[in-house]
Length: 121
Length: 107
Image (cartoon, rainbow over all chains, first blue to last red):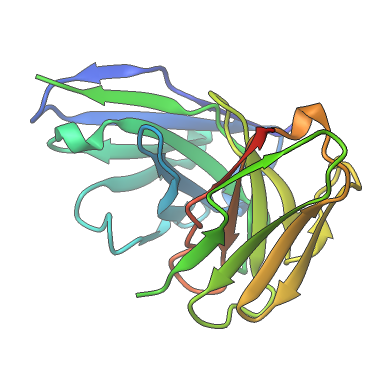
């Protein structure tokens, strides 16, 4: 069974750093792209970026380039989303998702359960 | 700037109704379009990919059509479990853009 399990909810202050995780199991983790998607309170889905665990190739949405860092440790089948200095506007649910197709761009067929990040002074 | 526009933003319908949601791309995306269903507090679930391919395990009352810039998701006979928010997503261009979502409510 394919599973993506994300780390738990976080409560942070503006300026804090944070790394959340997404652990894959039940498939060949290295051979499928992993994406991160943001959902702000009451809003739609926003694609943030994507990483290929096999070689750590990464692409970012222009809206998120320079604001977050996506990384992976394929030895433990885990992808990460990281902030160096959080803002209140980063408050959202963050999902990781597996891309259906290994090489070509494709839809996201499996999703993590989401990680709620709350940033407030 | 590339955009995906969904309509309507909210839809009120009754069990048994035929429901259609539209997604329009600002430029051609061929058939590189997916539809997701999301229920409150849950992650999105893939329903349709490549504009018209039904994801494994998804009921056949869901169907997708279109290519280029105009796409539709149709639910042939709305069931109680189908009241949710539906999102389209393109994956033809680099940015993998989502539409703003359509909430299907009970009439």
